[in-house]
Amino acid sequence: VVRVAVLPHREPWADAAVAAAGSVPSAVEQADALVWVGESPAGLDAARRAGRSLRWIQLPAAGVDGYLDLLDPAVRWTSMKGIYGAVVAEHALALALAGFRRLHEAVGRRGWDAPVGRTLHGARAVVLGAGSIGSALVPLLTALGSEVTVLRRGDEPVDGAALTTTLDRRFAVLAHADLVVVALALTPQTEGVIGGAELAALPAGAWLVNVGRGRHVDTPALVDALQAGRLGGAALDVTDPEPLPDGHPLWSLPNCIVTPHVASPTSMVEASMAARVRSNLLRFASGQPLDGEVDVELGY
Amino acid sequence: VVRVAVLPHREPWADAAVAAAGSVPSAVEQADALVWVGESPAGLDAARRAGRSLRWIQLPAAGVDGYLDLLDPAVRWTSMKGIYGAVVAEHALALALAGFRRLHEAVGRRGWDAPVGRTLHGARAVVLGAGSIGSALVPLLTALGSEVTVLRRGDEPVDGAALTTTLDRRFAVLAHADLVVVALALTPQTEGVIGGAELAALPAGAWLVNVGRGRHVDTPALVDALQAGRLGGAALDVTDPEPLPDGHPLWSLPNCIVTPHVASPTSMVEASMAARVRSNLLRFASGQPLDGEVDVELGY
View 1 (cartoon, rainbow over the protein chains, first blue to last red):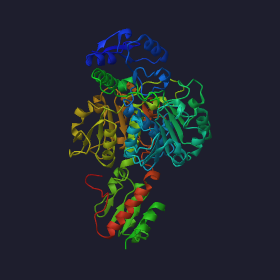
View 2: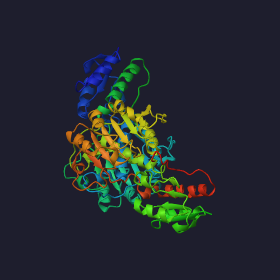
View 3: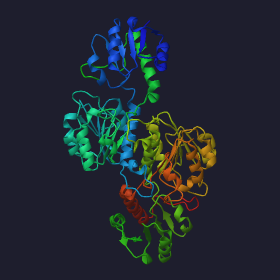
View 4: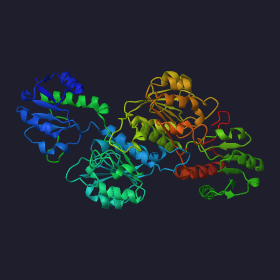
C-alpha cells in the first residue's frame, strides 16, 4: 500500500484520486509519495526535505520550469504534461481566430463598420513545440485549411504537419508565417526564442500567439514591434513578467490581446488531473513506468 | 459559345472567369447568361427584364432570401451556396470560442484578472442547418471534443454529428445545449426559429452564435434574455435590422459580440466564386447540371 501526502492543502480531486487508487493518506514524514497541489517552490522544498522516505513526487503543472532547482534525481518527478494539451490548444486557436477575424476590434465597437479580417484557410501557420499542446493544435489548424510547420528540438515529423524541422532553422520558416504559436516548454534553449530578430523576420500582418511561457518571447522587442504596427498583432495567455503589472504597455496596445494565464484553469482539467494521479498511484504501487515523468536533464 | 453579361458593374474576378471559360462578354439584351455581382434586387429585376434571351442567372451570395420575388422559373437560377461554408464555419467557431473563452471580457481589460472561461471539450453544441456552413462546422466542433446535434429540415444524418433531427424537435435539444449556432437559410419556415421560448429553453450560461440571417432570431427577445443575464451571451455576424443601427441595445450589452456581416468577405471567397462561375459556364455550355442551382420552391 502506498502512503501518500497531499500538500500544501486539502484538494478534493486529489483526495478522491488517492482514495480511488486504494492508497493511504499520510503525513509527509511517513509518505512514499507526495502529490503537490500548491504553487510555491519554497513550500515544495520544505515538504521535500521533511519527506525523508519520499520516492516519487507528482507536480501540479505541465511546465516545471518553476521547480527546476528542486528536481533532484534521488526521487522520481512527474508533471501533468499531456493533461493540458487539448484545452490549451483550444485557447491558442481561440486567440488566433480572434486576431485573424479582428474580434478584438469588433468588441467595444458600437457601429456597423469594421475592418475585414483574414482566414486561416490557406494561411501558413508555424507551431513551436510538439508536446501535447502542439500535437493537439496541429490537427485543429489543418482542419481549418492552414498549412502547418512545426518547429521543435528534434525533427521527428509531427502528424498532420506539412513540415517538421528544428528550432534552429526558425528564421527561414518565420519569414513566411501568417501565424506563429508558441507552445514550448521553457528551458534555457527556448527562452527568448522569439526575439527582436525573429519578430522582424515575420511578414507584415502576421500574428503571434503565446500559450507557452512569457519568457519565450522578448517582451520589449514585442512591444516595439506592436507599436510599429508591422505585425497584425499578438495574443498572449502568458507574459513576462507575470502577472503583467498594471500600466504595462501591452495593456494599452490595440493590437494586443492578453488573457491572464487562463488557457487551462483547474475547472477544465480537474478530472484529467485526478485521473493522472490515480493512474500514477496504481502504476507506482505495481512498479510500472509513471505517466508524465520529468526528464531532469531536459527540464520538462 | 455562351454570351455572358456581368452586371451591374465590372468585376475583375467575374470577367476573368468568363474569359477562362471561353465565354463571350455581351450586353444583357443579347446574353444567354447573367452573372449578377451587385446587391440591389431592383437592379437585378431591371437587368432580368432587359435580358429577354437569358436562360440562366448566377447570383452573388449563398442566401437568396433577398431575391425570392424575382426567382421566376422561366430561367435557371444558381447561387453561391457551398462556396462560403468553410470560411463562415470558421467565423462561427471564432465567435463561439471568443464567447466560451470570454475574450470579449479580456479585450479592453487592463489588469491581470479575468473570469475563467469554459471549454468546448465535452460541451453540447447544437448546429441549426446542414448546408455547407453546418457541414463544415460539425467536424470542427467534434475535433474540439464537443458533442454535436444538428437540427435541419429533414433528419438525414450529418457526418460527425452525434444526433441529427428535425427543427420542429428543437425544444428538447435546446434544453441541453451549451452552444447554439444558427447556420440556416432564411425561409418562411426558419424565420424566427430562435424566439423567446427557445431562448428560455436554453440552460443558463449557454451561448448563441448566428451566422445565418438576422431574422432567424427574435431580436427583442434576445435583447431581453441578454439583459436578464441568464445566457452566457450571443455572438452575431448577422442582425435584424441589418445594418444594426447606432444606439441599438445590442451594441451596449457586455455579453453580446457583434461583427458586421464579415464572416465571408469577398476577399476570402473571390477565388472560389470565380471557380464556381467558370465551372458553371462550362457546364451550361455543355448542357450539364449547374452547381448551386436554387430550388425556387424551397427558397434556397
